[in-house]
Figure 1: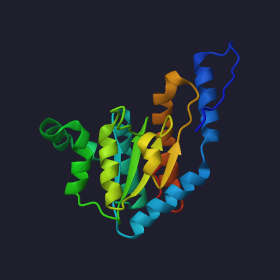
Figure 2: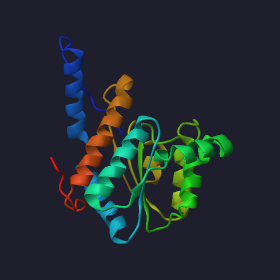
Figure 3: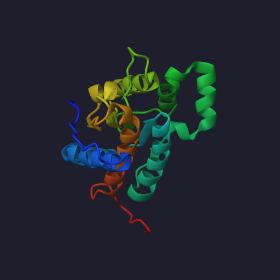
Figure 4: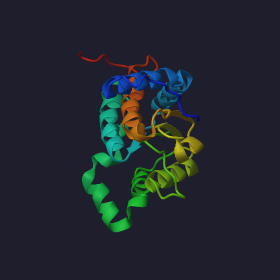
Length: 205
């Protein structure tokens, strides 16, 4: 996916530039993909499947937050492996970081009823050894015909190659790829949990 072109007057402050770029990203996202994700995750719920949300770093924090929203607002049985720090660190220590998610999914007996939602800046790249744990997890999931969704940055990486539906947050400035990618993970998942195809319970506020 090509980068979003952005031409801003040099007199703008950093904050003005940042917000203008965020607005540009927002209007550049493919709403039809988000619609497809909402319908797909709804189908996971209707067939009695679970949603496993995978992320590393800031995306792991987003995964834990999203688990809460999908469970509480949408009646989706959702889990994030990174929420179990004891298992995560034990597997990292004993088995290695690359397989922590795949082995967690194996114990959970993922099947074609289930879904995976990836939050990632790069989407995983085995050749560059970046987020290899995501690559291993997605390969494992594909073998079991798990539905795969993603909200990722840059070019989407391995996630974009194998996902059933993936939102790629476009790059507006190379030095801000991570903050925009992680910020728009939140924008998109909040859209999903508010979507009529998924939402079952109202928020209190």
